[in-house]
Image (cartoon, rainbow, N blue to C red; front, side):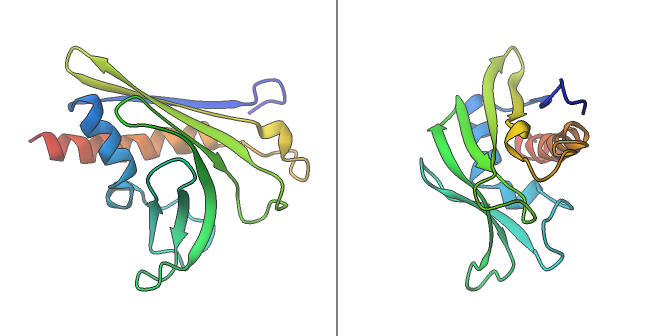
Length: 151
């Protein structure tokens, strides 16, 4: 990602309606998210519902202990999700923003993700590099889970 192109974007169409697409993305995030962890001890990821809910990389499924990646800033079921985002190596006050819109299509829903705010990560001049590719891969896994849910 260049210094001028400080936005990571990815989108995918899934064969379920916007409500089901939102539910899969949020309540069932641990079913399809894989391989992208801040810490090797992570076993799953959890998104707590509603504004103020946490996105947590879970280390211990029994206690729920883990790393808080971000907080939900917008919760509009079937339409939109927004949250803050940070990595474990960033300063406590450094965070970016992720927004996912769920748009109905003729055959299902288009989930369109935009990740911005990289200029706020002062301690890492390469912040954001590789995120477009990473989000594309994650959304492909999300689409696989949606296809399974639709069948």
